[in-house]
Length: 209
Ligand code: ADP
Image (cartoon, rainbow, N blue to C red; front, side, top):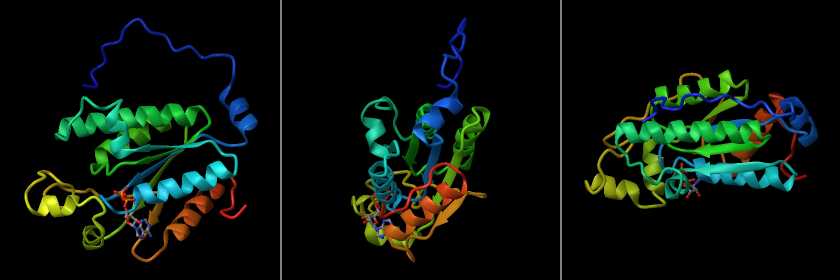
């Protein structure tokens, strides 16, 4: 589905250089890519982080699993091919958001290393920061949380190809950050994200400002 069919197209650079945009916004656009099992805590942490960032005047926006499938990706299912296309489109959209000076937060299981690496590559090519955050929560903890009842359905055979049950999750080999939600609270995880953003020179924000 990602075959190149567009021809005779030329990138229009515009008159506003990226560094001028970022300087005016006091923020470097970036993508924070949260990955991990279902119920590991990706959406919860991304949402809490988004709140802190926006409260501090930073333009931040979440691209979240199901939400994107309501619109942009409504024509995609859960086959390996569709999952790959789902992630490819998210990667492209996140990159556009980052280019606009936004701190874009993506929360998708994104179980396959190759798909995530492709999104990283897109950002590297575009000279934009890509920060992979592995929400490392053991399967048994995720399963005991089961906020949407999905593990129960998967165990009952009502959902096929469920990541962690009968579909693999490939752990990141070199993520920028690992969050252990079984040991750290949501606030502590948000704090770790903020420290990383500051250390990378993306934006400097404190949680209680
Ligand atoms: P995902 O987006 O990874 O599928 P969710 O964020 O939707 O996961 O669900 C995670 C569940 O785990 C929520 O019900 C959340 O309240 C709970 N939870 C408990 N402790 C934590 C933590 N430290 N970080 C994130 N979520 C946590």
